[in-house]
Image (tube, rainbow, N blue to C red; front, side):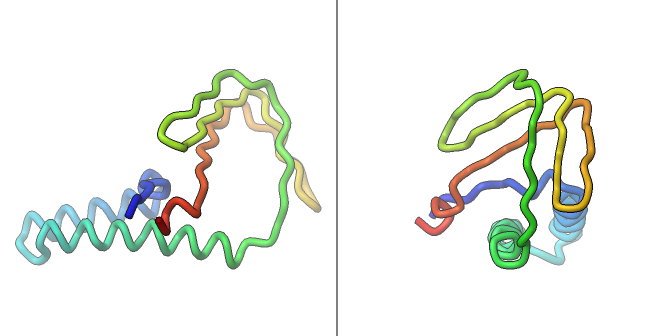
Length: 106
């Protein structure tokens, strides 16, 4: 089964990785179990976002860079305008990583 490490660079993902590393170093967890925890974390985040997030946001900005590699799109936008139902926000630079979540279940 293919897995994407999409959420491991988020704050919660980095804290989880750091904690698992400490547990492996001290002998509390095996490296194999730590890897299984990280894979389950990515699956759980994907499922939660698919089932619980109902908001829609439109994004407009200057496309600085884009690439497609291993079924993953990466976009870097400058002066991006995020517009939601009730608010809007401008961000100087944003990186968007997108992939097909169906590939996680193959």
